[in-house]
Length: 400
View 1 (cartoon, rainbow, N blue to C red):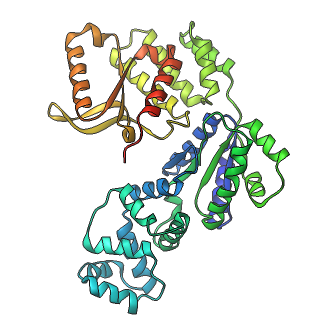
View 2 (cartoon, rainbow, N blue to C red; view 1 turned 45 degrees about the vertical axis):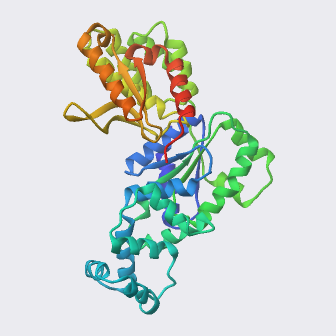
């Protein structure tokens, strides 16, 4: 089923300032992939949440990563005054602290919000803050973090398109109940009624959705969620098993198909699995098998709420390996976790073995934890690989 037309209608509603939450009803993994694929087609990033804790901070951090907010703040001020943006920026950077204070008191016609003052001061001093530090500083000025985001929306609405800003996806862990959805609904409603142009989606299993519709009383938040419901049909494990068996994976086709279907895999993940089967069951070059395993594992991790949107494929690090920056197969940057995929040739070839051990030592020396898996095990022992990665994610907390 193609849900893209429905998602496009939701986006049109947001452009018209109509509060809208996209409720993706289906397996959590399937729903998450539907939203991320739609966002990717729009060149928009996705902030994936398992709860709404620190949602404001995480969204603003993503925005700070994507945009030069101090420069945009100066542009917004110039536009409000009807001045040339470039000329105003040069003039502003030459002002003293006292002159900037006088500008706010005597020239700027609107109330000066904390966010506006901070960003314009940063533009003048040319201080550079890391995205999470800037987000922390901006929200720290507000007793209500949502109020801080509302100020930013109001400020930047005239100088950049909110249709390019990060989207939010509430993709809960597998074990969620009716109480969870009842608690989340009014908070989501508060977000979208205050900032209707912000793109929000929530993944809800079908049984939970039916319970919510049947057992909960009518409310503004329930009407909002019901209006945004989109069906995302579950995948067929039988179809997955047939495709994997036809590709050459006979022994593990059924359990792998069940696991993929359980996590809501789609045809893109299945295609990556087929390529991995073909690469490891034929006389393909070792590097080809390794590459196929990397791609499949990366796509699979996008299905899991705990790992979706957090892993990078073939990422570069600020660690030299020889004379070049080190590249790793998969990276969870916030937890400093690295996954490396090996083929049997890594152990048959002494040079490869020595190179990998040196790479491991350098990664550990710089504070990274390395998980290594055989390319063949990525599919055949997918459940164990999944559990090892999830255990590492739970054990190692994200860095500041």
